[in-house]
Length: 393
Image 1 (cartoon, one colour):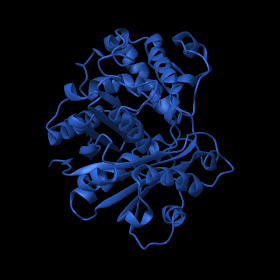
Image 2 (cartoon, rainbow, N blue to C red):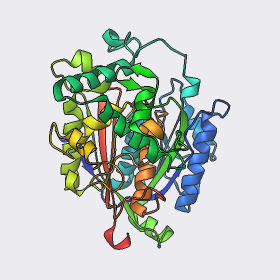
Image 3 (cartoon, one colour):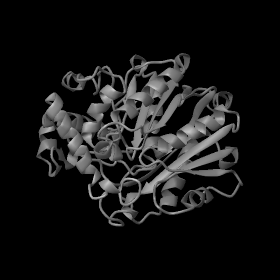
Image 4 (cartoon, rainbow, N blue to C red):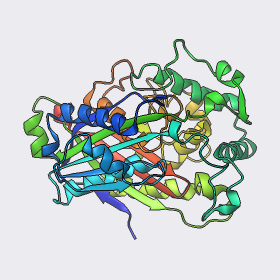
């Protein structure tokens, strides 16, 4: 069975995002409202132009999406709640793009928000009871640290190489106005290594912050976007793939949080196939880097280098400014932040800025195609491709 979708005639009408951070006193619906209004303004639209909304959040409470949409008004449009852990935002985008591509909607909104400050301290350790009770006592950081240790054992990867990636993302985050962690100085690998240890080899600067935020993307038929924004580069939704995990040996100890490696690799291949593109066509990429060693693994799993060659990409600076394939130019989950639901849409926000050529201070030269990847709780993976119309870039 094929899990990749190619979208036809779907363009980005507008994007909006509030800076991620700790906003304990601000209701999540207000964060969502502000991000949505920014996207509507960017699109030159109002809520009356929206035919369908997909609202993503992972907070354990019902009807939050409807409450957030009420902040914009009561127009009767259908609203669907999307939840797939960290992958929520990209899957809300996928459903919105599919709604437009299928002809069901002319304009669709993906609005995602979350407040980790409302959830911190609200539960027990690990992932809790349920399908994966065996892993409940182990916190996610420990799983990712075990994954990092395994690579260090198998490939000779060093903590310094992980720290180099983290420093790159912190320095990208300093240039992004919507990033949570914006350092006031150039971060070095030595500084990352000297930070407090969480789970060896991962220090606090190698782990994402639990924060709050909201982001929104509006998709529409190409002709509508051309009419509303005639002078703007036309950014298209090209393709998306979504898969869930399949069993592989060792799954009980790796799959429950990070997912089997085949999941990301297979999802990427399905997305490339649906798009008629390959990793060599991608100008800029965004991947799940809640913990820094993930980014290193995904260089290989997303097809940007052969197995065992990710460390060389780091050493050669190929995934940073001026490199062959810049990764996480907004700081990624490490620096931009990872509130859960809106994380994927924040990736798309940055991807659209890059494709429009308006990512001030961190612009990738001649960016044409952007990739956005996330995994959700080790159980799902999604890879998505956007592109800009060459004649308008």
